[in-house]
Length: 133
Image 1 (cartoon, one colour):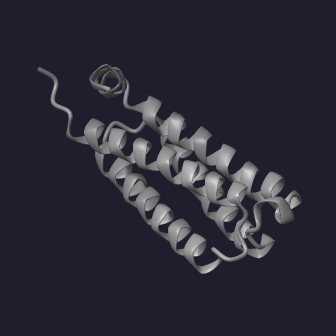
Image 2 (cartoon, helix red, strand yellow):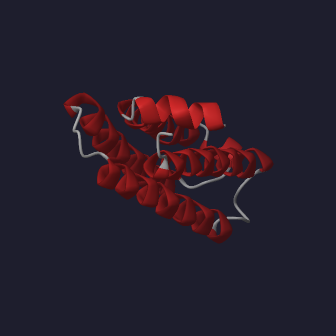
């Protein structure tokens, strides 16, 4: 993990690219795949579309910072890391609210999504605080 932090800290644009592409993938999975197979996963489509919209907004934010190559990136990365944490909290809340409707596959999907995002947030905060030796 330390090597990943060092590599990304040397080129902080990379974390915005990773975050943005991951958010695009989430938006696609939530807004297209999970809604198409709503009965298989169990989460209502209206909820999935909201989560997909949020993910699309995060993708736009992160990829904007990636393409603009802004030098003062620490605050921008902190904002998206906090937003990602809030997204995980929202997702967990929605899983709890709709737990009776969710299938095992739905629970597995959202648990995996939260795990991946929490890992990304950990890396983002480590990159923000990383000091070159």
